[in-house]
Length: 374
Image (cartoon, rainbow, N blue to C red; front, side, top):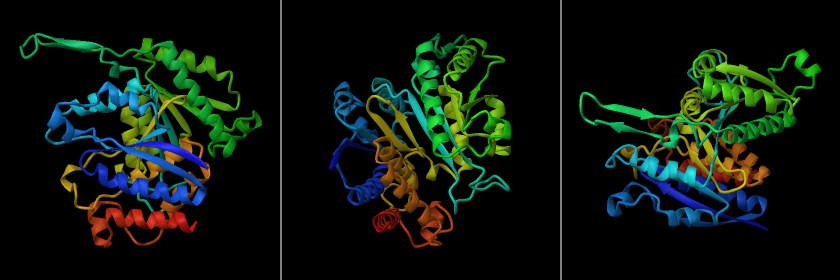
């Protein structure tokens, strides 16, 4: 029997509540599909920072390396200045564990409303592969004459060919695998005749950021020769945001830089039904990866048992898929869809959950039962 070591990282606000439901569902899948979980709890977050002044010590990074995956609730505390926890915990974990891919499925499930008029699940089903450790997030820059009328601030975007190449390789491989499982619906007759099964779109800004995205574009087309089954496409980031809204069906897999990826994935979350259903992974293909709901810590709802746990549950599904437990991951997804189509709930907002007589824990119970029942 396979056994996985999972670091549980509840974090702040409602993070512990949604993570409890996520791990409840993952354990139900483990029991059904014949593997087990060995979990350890880590209390890094706002409350610990307030007590100790500590964010994420180097010793914790070394501890995390011993696990198969990290399962995160949420980071963000109203009593801690913005940036301290995000940089000191989230970015440090991503950088130190070399989680160089941020993987964001954007999938509209049946039973979930999208703000896009006339669009349905057949139109919104794509994946964003975001480079996760370079760009403006490297911290290169500084401030001069701070607090004066002559203040100057710089923050430099940096990309290495090594960093770009490994992100592109992950994206091409992901598109190839996705296309092999089910060829992309948007391919034309000419594409199919040429043996194409998937499309990979590079999202950049080659007309202005000529150095940064000139590097991305050259590397993209050079590497693309090795993947003849993947159709290559390009879109400026501003056009991408427009097309997400107007024609989301044009996208299959998208690869982009860290800053642009940060922005377009939040737009992606909205068109798939909101932050409450969006999950993501911070991936090191050869190391320890971290999975999380995309939404924040929602501190005003802490302890009220009213927050929607679906994003955390789908993050657990992504974690199992990454660990190679594909059947279990598919079972969690199917159980989530069954709940969304059950008629028990009209929407996933706090108000709608309360009106349906449900709660955070009750939703977790229902989906765990659906997994167990198969």
